[in-house]
Length: 196
Length: 203
Image 1 (tube, helix red, strand yellow):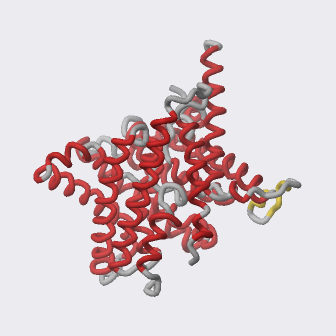
Image 2 (tube, each protein chain N blue to C red; image 1 turned 90 degrees about the vertical axis):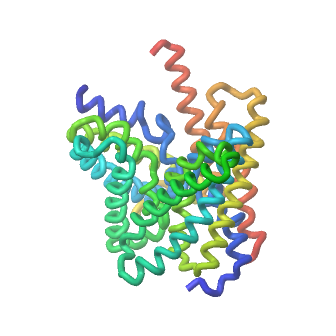
Image 3 (cartoon, rainbow over the protein chains, first blue to last red; image 1 turned 90 degrees about the horizontal axis):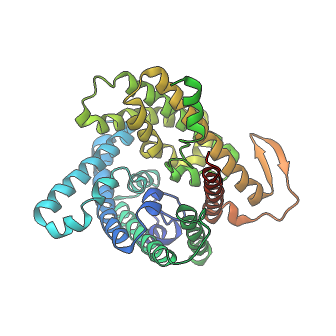
């Protein structure tokens, strides 16, 4: 059981040490796809934090109160996918009805999240690490914050690097990967900084 | 359309990684060694072939408006099978690949091929397409895994057999995440360069 892991450590894990984008390579499609400008990166990150926290909460409840009592653990993957898809739809309806301004800024990013492996990753890692309810929620929020930090850094650097002159075959994706190399070099060193 | 050209297309023009840029997460995460790369591509290939066949067989029955949820459920079923089989028969491989086995479910390659190909073509060509894409995926993963393992540990050991050893000081960064980004960045730049050259020759 992971009951002895402190909440602070789980938070730091989610944000830095096991950063989803750069250390664990979860959600890379949005990492290279949506970071061309800071505005859309911020929109996507907002939507991801929101859905990650919700998905971590709901999937914990479903896993421990529906699947385990009924001995249906082998259905966990299928039910998590359905839960996330339903959750994204629900969030879309609620936000569109009640907060139209937020819907306009998040709108197009919400459907993308269903197939974002970062969200499913949070849910699966929670089960794998046997986190309790509070720990699951904290890990979900922390992973969302870590995602946001990296997305904003990446989009800021990419926005400025469009002005740099590079060979035509490096322009675009290869350049984004080189920037990611530099960022991940910084993040990898967190392994040693925070003692575990 | 002939079967051979459909197969080759999955490796070259529509290569999942360099042609379509789909499924980056497993490509970078599990390529710390050739062994992991082969295990991951085997799992993905099984799911891709089975889901392409089943979706192609059911393509006239699936109502277009709900096709995506149905695709995802079909894929999730096959992924659960892979997960259970790997857990039971290849525990070390399962431990090394970890959370990325269940994450095959959201791998864009599989749903991309289902949507773009299996939904429109018959079972035979869907099978060929799945085989081609899986081979393309396998080759890229083994290439990246080989480069990272060789530079990161100084040797390549696959299934207990040492294939090659380099007299270098291992660059640990190549096994960690920076190496993954660097390798795919360099490879992608080379592919772009060759494409541009081919275009300039008028080919």
